[in-house]
Image (cartoon, rainbow, N blue to C red; front, top):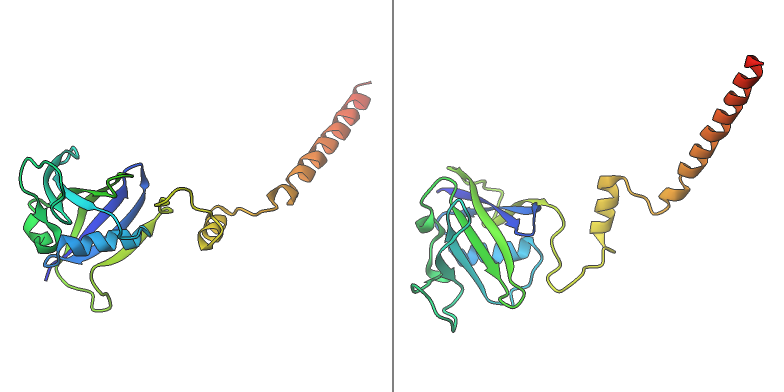
Amino acid sequence: MAILRFRIYWEDDDSVYRDIAIRHTQTFTDLHNCILKSFEFDSKHKATFYRSNDNWQRGREISLEKYDKEYKAEPLIMDSTIIGSEITKPNQKFIYEYDFNKYWHFMVELIAVDKEENVKLTYPCCLRTEGIAPSQYGTKGLVDSRLAEMEEKYDLKPDAMSDGFGEEGDEVEADGEEETQGDDTDGL
């Protein structure tokens, strides 16, 4: 059974992405739910995928349900559309749109196809998380584990200013003044 690995980029910052592995026989609803979970979004809003080309232009729509809007072509429904049936090229792309009021956009790109399943994983699953997910409902307070993660990653400390940065610079200036005075004395 083929395992498809997709990289899902947040449209506003491509350094924020998630890698998701899913069986080719699973549906777009499975992918939709996994994307939401990996970006820490709830599942209360409308959503749709669009087939896309290399220029990220929208093609055929694969929707969570048929919405009350005008369609150029009838949308495919996520629940009954198998992911493998929509893969036509090795780097297949989709655009994923979530919450039609906030318009969250994610770029979905096929990055690998594995022939064998990993028996330790339950598909679909998030294999890699890069960057802090955007806040679904406004600004997120960074007072949880993500703040500690950022502090560790960038070696940030709350009391960085009192860690000797100012004192060390002051000592160098004092030493420099003494050397200059010594040089003046030698020149006389």
